[in-house]
Image 1: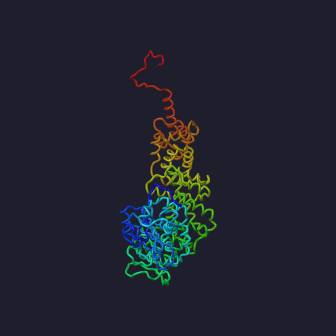
Image 2: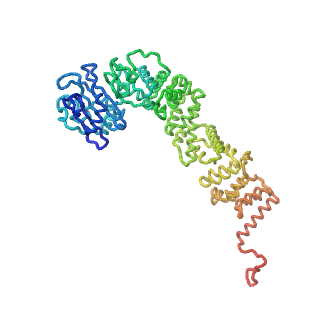
Image 3: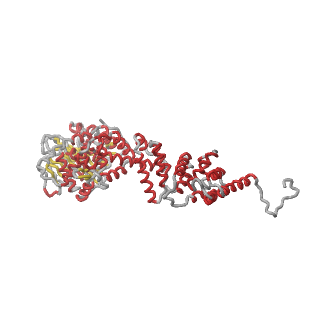
Length: 616
């Protein structure tokens, strides 16, 4: 089909064939029509003129060969077709050259182009059917070609036609033993040019398989030539495929692998390459993505270090995330299962769980919980997933948000003891860092997760026992501003506690700043005097006990300020001992009564009331 005009990035097309006078002025195989300007044509011609010839080692075979080359930010794909010249002589070639920005003419496009019918997207005058059928004249008689709409070509080859999927299917016919030999060669000498002799599958299939395995692991370009007579020419791509044994002269600096010859004994890297191939076949390309180094590896030493880091156990090259995904489905090898059951796997599992996105962790946790019968010996790893999910939920709650993991945990809440362990860990960590520990968001998150009320109450009692009274009273004051009911519940639990070994400071420090939590009580018992009295009784129980003496009463009144709350005075009268302690409270009650009901300036002996004043 003819592609419509496209306003995006463009590529150019040049056709090479035999001509008595090509666009470069020479008679032979050369450019006969192009969309390039003169300077660009000469630049590209100097790069590829030694590559435009099609292989002639099998006369009569018209299967095209392909070349992919890159030069800094430019790239080209060549399709070379053996043809007869205009005089009917064999040994000539028809070559189409697609040139453009390397970001668009990339390896994926080049590989897809190897499986494409170029007549589907070439300009009409440049199509093979037109050129070989005599519908377009040679040289300048053919006229200039229009540029190629690169965006449309990419959509056609990479999206509309499943050409890369076809290469995936063809790669299944590539023997693992040969792929391991080739991968070993690349891992041993990253970046070294490689010639493959007698490949049983087309060159683009081999390049596709190798790039999928090591393309983002090893340094070096992924340029290729799928069918060459030999590899002796200069400036050839990194990967060259030849059919026969005439590979070329031995001093070209290329490494050669003869696919038809005996492989011989392999070294450690071949074993690792075989494991890597098996891993990718079993787990798919996404799993391999998680093994990628931060930067492409440029030396065999770097490769060896990378292999060692990803060998999780003898004979097992993998990543823990893939193993965790496979375990619920019973898709572990004996070596992989043994590794996950070993104590050595736990720190690595914890690290990988911390790195996961919330969505990934949610899916993994759901799978493990619903298919747990498939992994009875690995239940300890499910516990690690719960721990990480709880930390994520609590982190989100502390910052005023929620986590999508709450819904997953609510579908199967973890044991309350595990929640307590997580909270204990967070408290200890906050203590070591000298940071405040916010209790309320934790319990709100725990409630949303679905922890039973009885277990939440038990958790609260344990937490209360770990805090100093001063800290707890500060929490009651703070929580009352946003959640009065929770503040009342926390105060009630504080009152039930009898003493604490964690009294780091005087609780009256907090009470003096808050007038004995007067505003907090108003928030927890708005317009409810009786309830306010009960709350003050709880406060007294937390600080001075259920039967305070004279010293304790003085401390309470001093903390309450100039005008103590009537509800506090009522609570004091109800709880303090008889005698002088109760007399102190009664005196404050009387004084406060007269201050509120008999306002005015007291008589001080200097301002006597006027005898004419009828009120005196």
